Length: 340
Image (cartoon, rainbow, N blue to C red; front, top):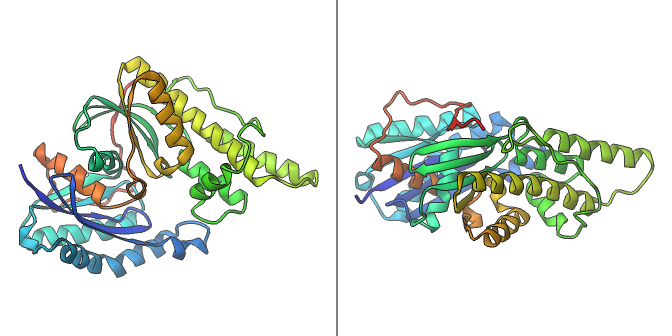
């Protein structure tokens, strides 16, 4: 079934609109990033983010439709991220999408932000075979998910405290690196020794759960101790050693879950999917195990509306639509939990 969907994403600090046909053909994809605005604050300020979304969202919709060369009546549906995220930011996208869907009399599709990140993989590889395992790693989430079929997800593991991306940002801030910190640590780590400092790896009762708060604290304690001793801190070595600890934990638990579930296909999703060390470690680990590995192009790892449009297409195929009661949800569970 052919379907053209206009998708809106505004869960954090990117205002994004895309027009996607059949879940794979991107007719338009426009993004207004707020990184420079939030850099001076050292992180995202929710109220500022919301106001920026209000300023740009209508213009981005017009730009996307012009780029796609379509009229609004040529659309088959309107999709929007409705959670999780910053509630004020989400409200801008949700209210705009609801108004547009009502005005042009088209179905409304509410999309979970994590599901959008998962489907970034299907943009470039629509023929991915399921079942598959997906490691979702972002500033707000760290999950190992089993995807049995489209729309059927099971959580095998998740973070018990900080998400991996959150740990990257906090360690970067402690190192005096600019926001966003994840890419800066990735860049510096290439110049450092990943074995210079033995940072801890958490061991939890559930073999597929994560914990990064202890690692974050260990890095902060190391920095404070070195400063008290009057030593010069090798920032590249700290970045490389911290990143190695995160990547080791992510890979070890993901491959353990894949072995238990006997799944041969692995997807990587989320903003931290752009991390070069993580991509390389998962790719080499999959190759050694005879597994197939997929990760999105770098441009679709960070928040964008094209991934929302792709997720919406598969949701529409399942006949799942929303009505005008759809509301923004800052906290939004995604998949049922499988106890190990």
